[in-house]
Length: 428
Image 1 (tube, rainbow, N blue to C red):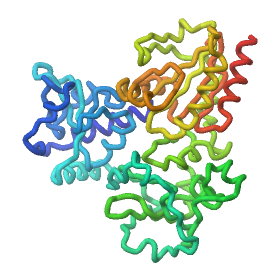
Image 2: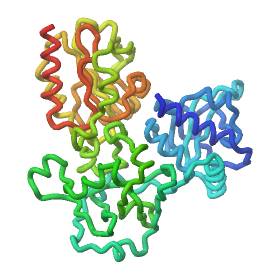
Image 3: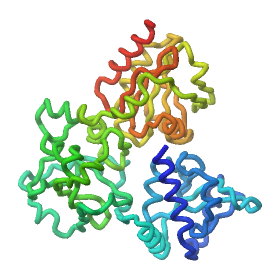
Image 4: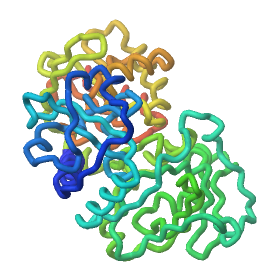
């Protein structure tokens, strides 16, 4: 919920903080190609009032479109709205200009980008333009790179653009792309760190990442990315770690509560960031929710069937929070499918998945990937009610409506853990 409010605040801030007059790019109107925008008129994105900004929540993953006509998930919108390379444009009915009904995100012109950067800087935001990166849907561009173990820091980074994070700087805001299996890592002394491992035990524990890299990459309280190097396409190519300062250690995030996204890691290695070790388990959320009564949830799945948590009393409800672009979420689906098969025909166990993507995107995705849970679309509001910020997250609710289990991040034996809680709940 805090994340959603923060993004809405940023959107409003970027809208109302300037009276710059900027003209839209080109003569072709986006509403000509996007049915949902037909009959609506665009507002000047640099002259939005507080009332207009408060009338629409773009983080719900609903009625938000990219210029090519595709719907944007809440995560995709969040990434773009804090990147000055993109411009969010609200749409209203001519007769009701104070109520925003839809949002279009398009690439900003050079003038618009400059104006947005000026607003961000004036507001105290650090601007980091790292663009979209490589195509995550192209398997060839997701394959790990086999680096020479003798790779030299000075030689490898020559010709790349260096971005330095100074100890006094806040976290930079902007869009980035990091595939950890295609990045050359260097320790604080500039020594090359092997990315992958051939050790069977490390392979199983760390999802293929080397023990040396895990020491720096996931030990966020002790090390930070001191220097990041990008190429001319703004894709991260190298990272050099440095020791974290006392202030950085104090403000270090928890790995398990950081939303995992396919644009932040490669398809092979991403799941390791969700669940590397018990040190990064989502203890805060677990301690907050386990033992408490589940909140009221009313929703409609992608098949049009209603789900009401109150009406599910007397059943064991298993919840799974996920989104299409989340590779660890996809990876655990076969395990979750086995659970559904195990309890097939058992009326007092119900499996519900809450996805942040739109109904249309989910229907298209599920034609290529089997998931046997009932699927609820556009579920970010439900995730916000529970405070779920990490994906995947699995929750078990007993027959009395009490939360008895919560696990965030990828877990290899998640099916066994969930099954144990289901059996425990069925006996009561």
